[in-house]
Length: 253
Length: 183
Image (cartoon, rainbow over all chains, first blue to last red; front, side, top):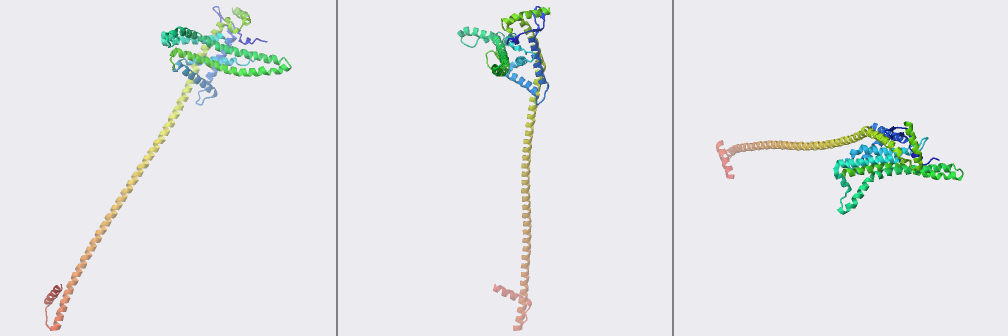
């Protein structure tokens, strides 16, 4: 029986090495290409029928657009809309990666791109850098007042280190949250799936017991769909909230 | 070189798997990050240059169309209200004019009737006056006849009683005297 961790393994398909760095085209890369292709195709198809009364695909594309735009506006204000294309891409990439990873194995096992810390941390770290650049560009050195809330001076001795640590831990919490959710969900599905097969092939009364993990895997699958959407949303909205800090420092709009 | 790279990955993949999570296999990080940048960048370019502007245009079109239709509906409603106001004004004007005309007519007719009545009255008055004059003249004439007849009768009577002939002038004088004495 395969390990439940096997689904996360990365195998090279086309080995590539540039300057001593191994950048092979792997199954992970293949699924990134699939995720991007599906996302682009899905949304572009929806966008290409520009009817007054939208078609189903058009409706999905337009609702996604409005949904993300509203989210940015509410979390980061109208100025945040400058980052709309990036946040839209981020949300869609994470959402489609999460959803495509949930496809049941049919001959081949779908690979969940977002179940890898390398991927989620890269995205989170990019967001982190973007927030710092936007903050410095908008407020100059005044951006660092983000670490000093308006409190009595003595409190700052304690608060500034706390704020700095919390700021620095943002990319870690952002990336680990998504990665751990995907890892745990997919591991759980694999484990329950293994139980179903093991019990069913055990024979006798145990075969009937296999209904229990089957029901469980059904429920967990439904939950995983929710988590797939929720984690994409959380990733996107936290990005908006961090951007809001960079744009407006401590003031609330 | 390619085969060597594959060997390196496979060579390290086995111990990594036994050691723990495939996610912690640092050997795969450069490849993952490189392909993430490539694919994510591509998706960003496609979405921001092609897909999102189209969706935005479609949404803007719909918004514009809806606003245009609402505007047209509002204009039509305004037009209907204007037409109604104009109709009411015209109706009120016409009614006023009709009232004026009726008033004028009534006054004119009344005036004409009064005038005609006055003329008729005047005619009747003059006719009456003429008749009265004629009556008075007839009366005077009759009186004169009566005097001359009385004088003749008196002369005849005097002749028969005393056999004296008197002239008609004397008889008329006597009649007048007798009349004056009687009052």
